[in-house]
Image (cartoon, rainbow, N blue to C red; front, top):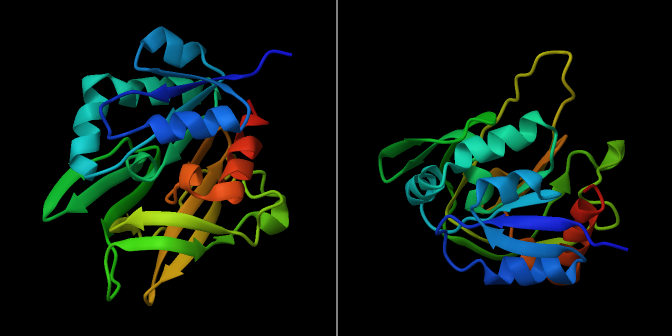
Length: 214
């Protein structure tokens, strides 16, 4: 049996080796690449991300990553964004007064968390919005905790969609009196604010759930 092939997008966003190893342990072949052909032909594309929104967008644009992601989604080919790799999928990010345009796959603004202690670092629970409707992302791990490291997030999101399209399944997390989107499952496009590769058995199961859709 041939294992599915996951391309991890290489656009200069920090240390991605942990993500590569985690996907391998979850049961897929992995290639770290920014080659357009390999990204297009892979069964799944994982978009990692650490650091500032603006820096990640610069790196993404340098390898034509926005177009590569868009072309996969047009073809209904699975994409998974992690941490800032999730944030850049939204319309824009604002950090230190700097406004940066994102990929625009979803509407929304990434902004600083309004909590007494930032960054939000450590284990936290999530509330899967799609669990009652059969979430594939959180199948078998609806009540688990996941590992977060971030200072920014999507705190206010009203998803506006044409009626013909399915609604995204949106997962929320509360921290320090604030609330932010911690995961989205929307057809071929999945994303998590937390780090599955740092979330132990629960994170491995989530990656396995994603790989099962490839």
